[in-house]
Length: 241
Image (cartoon, rainbow, N blue to C red; front, side):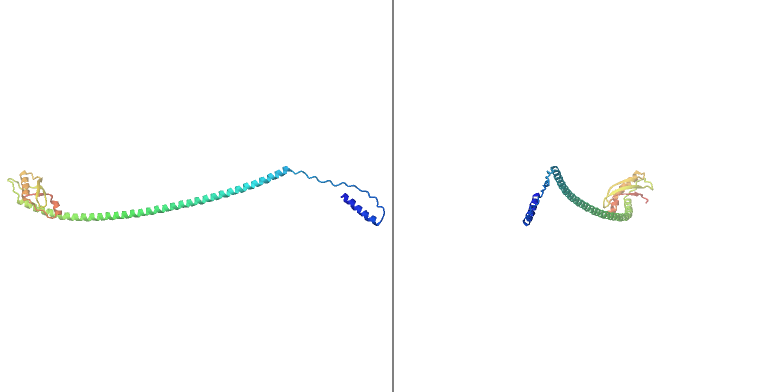
């Protein structure tokens, strides 16, 4: 700047001297000190290192946050899938239980219906059996009544035939009677005859038994069912009657 100022002043002086040949005035040059240049300060390496460290830490923290966020996202997705799988499995299990429950209910209902049907059939069979028993009992009662009438009638015929073949023993008292038990076969043949209740007179008792054998075959019913009552009979023999 000092040099420029001097050169400018010199130029002005030359222009003036050309116009007027006057002696240029003596100028006092003032020497000005040049402004001192600013010396660049050395860089603050510690501050830069700290700044870089902080930036690195910030990046690392950001990366860690991103990693943790990704991990959390994956974990949430895993949990969501696990929860969906659990719910699906639970729904399937519940559905299976419902199916089994319905199947068991249907089976119980079927068993109950079958049991009811069996019980109803059993009651019907029992009712039919009871009815048949009643009918059979009534028929037997009527048959017994008819047979009893036949028995009494044939017993009278037997006594009559035995009386015709009876020989009164000498000295037999009047009013004697004995009960004779006789076993017969179809047709009236006598298998055996014996005194079931004595008259007290042995000769009289023997005469009655002999008369039974002499009278064979005895009159018996031809109907097999009625004859069953004559396989073994007892009758009272009394000559007076």
